[in-house]
Length: 492
Ligand SMILES: [Zn+2]
Image 1 (cartoon, helix red, strand yellow):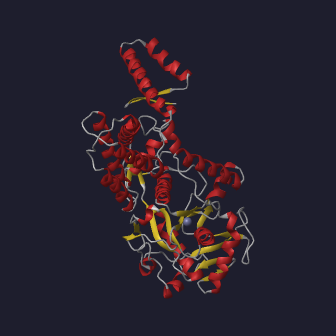
Image 2 (cartoon, rainbow, N blue to C red; image 1 turned 180 degrees about the vertical axis):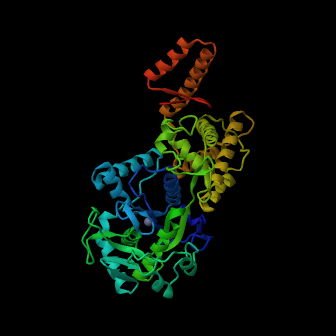
């Protein structure tokens, strides 16, 4: 029998703002859509957290025995610099600056995104559709929305009529924003815009002569508005109504609000039963932003080539660190926090590696069945990974006690313990047993730390020949030392 029949999953629904018992539309199978990356630069760490949060959801649903169709798109057109339908297309801008084709930008950063997700051992989605691959579907939806009277055309562009929509529907129900307040707090249109109201959003934009990413449509040569692609692709692959829609917290408004409005204006159905939003990541207590330099890329964490962390951390440790916070909490990224996560992860893995060597006895000093259910209870409570990890540490503690002959376990219970730990650590959390390569990285950093210490001693003794020799010979084998006020760090 499928596990889900015995487990009661609760999901926090951003639409109702409360935890709800999860019931899929079709018994045993689930449709899930997550807004994917706009591929105009290297995927940043905050986005990785969102995708890893939904990887955890995907993996747990599969573990429970559900058949899951997980759709995560690639935005390769239509996402302008400014969410309010203005500015240059992000991909076209990058292409212009680097003097390459927009599709070269898309290809480069799609590959980067896939490589990074693979390093984190995230499962690929079932379908990964692109915005440019669904222009016809998007035009079809615009035609329907126009026919239903919730959009208007001006000078070759088509806009969604938010005020008209709000007469019969509720615009703002996901984000909790009130249309009257929005109107009161926006400036008058400056006369440059074709919009009737500033709250209206583009479904189709006429391309300026210099805009290279353009497609023919009944209204103009142009491109679809950013919000529309997700409505088109989710409807195409999951139907007019589906179970779960996820994304980063920053997408709640306007992106997801607009998706709901489009679906309701298009087919008059509420498209999504459970809306889920992953919270953001801060770095040393500050919002991550490229402009302030308070930023770090995943590969910079893995290689150690950064000015933020004291040493390199593996993708598995980075992911384990992220899962030690609940996906709806803000998580702060720092060297100390990662080091603590690394220690914890190693402790957990050492315990798992003891499992096959443990002696068995006639009784078990821990209630294994209750422990096992508490692992499920944690994940059933809106995918509460930190509570799950706390349970895994309880098991690690027990394993160590058995090893030290301070506790005992029967063969049968040991078996349950082993299968449960393996299921949650490797299948649900998707952690990887660090390869010898990664274990060697740990030994390597210990060795380099020792050499740094010897070099510091040499320098203190004014033995510069030795200190330079250590630095140069490390450099010759590809290990760079960096001297700073706070001390010396290294990168590979
Ligand atoms: Zn989206």
